[in-house]
Image (tube, rainbow, N blue to C red; front, side, top):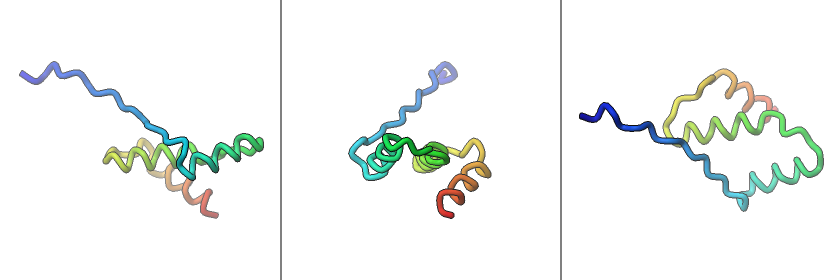
Length: 68
């Protein structure tokens, strides 16, 4: 009888003191486009929890764009 278990809701916790968050905040305050950062950070969070990426190709392209 475990057919009626409600799905758990995902929670993305953000540490505003993390170096990446501080760097992104500085970019945003300077008016810079955050470009591919949201895609990469969400992809990393999904991978860290063991979930599949909704679009692995999009994630790889975003990482490559930030690295180049």
